[in-house]
Image 1 (cartoon, rainbow, N blue to C red):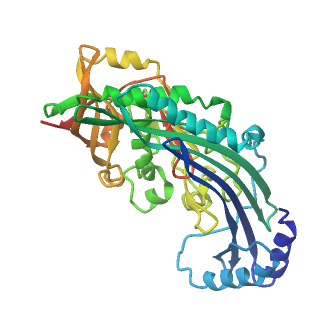
Image 2 (cartoon, helix red, strand yellow):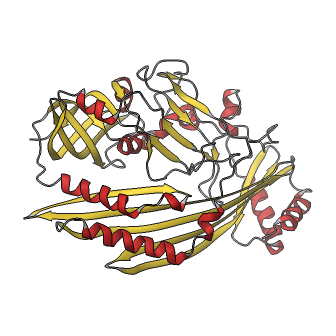
Image 3 (tube, rainbow, N blue to C red):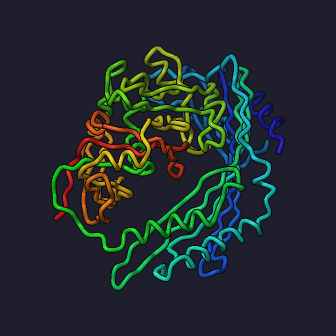
Length: 450
């Protein structure tokens, strides 16, 4: 749809009451397919989107938004923004950004994904469920078998000259199986995220989920104590995502992060490097510009253990007297501007996953944790999480372990990293981008068990 005339009308109608204006338009199409017992259990195609508007009057920015993107909404969104701006009490300086000198050219839309027939995607999910059930007679049911696809389009224009647009798409598939032996019941899961449908292999996904479930049969607790811990790649990524707020400049400025005044200080082991890369091919969080129009940047948040920067948007950067890092973010067109990473990941180390296991005399490999929302405190860094995985003895996996709780402090965990694997994997997307990590070995954590 051509929104050019609507945007021009907004800017023309608002010029007498507002000094500067910005229009952000977002459109999203989502496909959801679930399978249960060989049949399509859920099939949904939904489209959503709208327009958000910001206008500057008397040094204050007012906000408004609408789902109806046409000329009939013009006067209302301008009126609402002017009224809302009158009640802004913040003393922080806010401006509408005038644009970056240049932007990376990214191709984030895979035409082949959108052209792949829906019938083929449905057949893929059915084949995935069927394959998982056929691999072992101990697989008794499928707890979840889903395919999803998201196509998004965003436009950002303002009266300072910004005129940007970007289109992207991605897909994911998730499988969870239930296995049973005698009275012992366990689950296993697998997933993939990509905008290249040719990478979706139902046989490998089914095998991964079933093998994980079967490997946990017979699991029991372990004696309480302090153990070396290996976090499987996607599990450390999940933990990292929970503590992203400590790296956001807004939280630092409000005193909600213990990283305040820690720039250029060592906050992690020297082998640890944390990268935010908006230019990754096939990256869910990839983008050439943020939601304020700032050109995105490749950057190291932590470089060999040293904190180099926080995530900034235009407002927090101005407050600190620096340039934005290009991490301005809107959860949707209805949301106020906030801050989020793009593709954030721990840089691969030089150890294979097998090396991490072999280097451990007696410890634990953690393959899942629960309670990240309730058992982790992003302000203090403390966490206490229910977990399961495997006991390691003499460099070999000995047996499955469950009914344990691991506890520690994220700031301490970063410093206690002993080895980093070379098996980088991204977790399922959240917080606007995606978070990834290789498997990571920690010197020791407190484990509560028997």
